[in-house]
Amino acid sequence: MTQAVARAIEYWGATPGAGRVLVLSGAPAETPAAGENWHGRANEAAAMCTTRGTPDGVNSFNAPAGFADCVVHLNGGVRPTWLADDKRFAVFCKQIAHEFGHLEGRPDIGALAGTVESERPDLARVPVSERYRLVHGHRIYRGRPASSRATRVRRAHRRRL
Image (cartoon, rainbow, N blue to C red; front, side, top):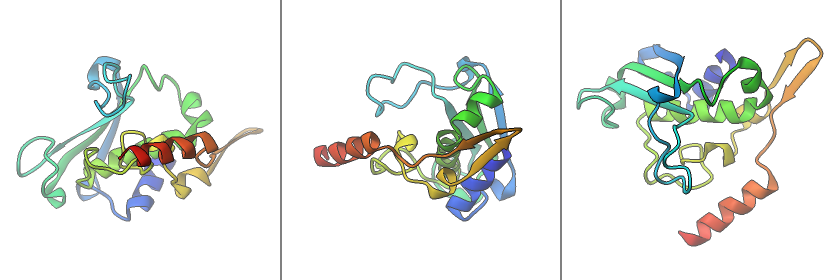
C-alpha cells in the first residue's frame, strides 16, 4: 500500500488533503456501485472509492486545495489479501492513482478513455506503476505495461467518441 500511495503522489506531483489521506479496507457494502460508465458492471461494488470534505460539501470536486478528511476506501471483497494486491501491483497502483486523482479534484465524468482518470485506470499507461517491482523472498512481482488488447480497447473506444 505504501508503495502504491507513493507512486500516486509521484504521478500527480502533489499530496492531496494537506498531506493527510487515510486508506481503509472494509466490507464490500462500504463502497458504492461501480461507475455507470463501466458497461456491464454498474451494479457491482467498486474496487475503491474516495470520500472527502470540501468547502462546497461532502465529495464535491470544486476547490481541491480545500479538501479535508480525505479517505480512500478499499473494497475488502475485491482485495482480500496483500498477496492478491502484490500479484497485480501495477493494476492496484493505477487504481490508487485514480482515487488520488479524485482527491486532486478530477472526476471520472469527461475523462478520456485510456487515462488514469477514466473509469478503467487499469487500461492506462502509468509508468511509475508499471516499472515498479515488488520483491518478497524469492518472488518478484513485476508491473506490466498495458496489454495489446488494452490498447485495442482504448483505440476502439476513442473511435466511438
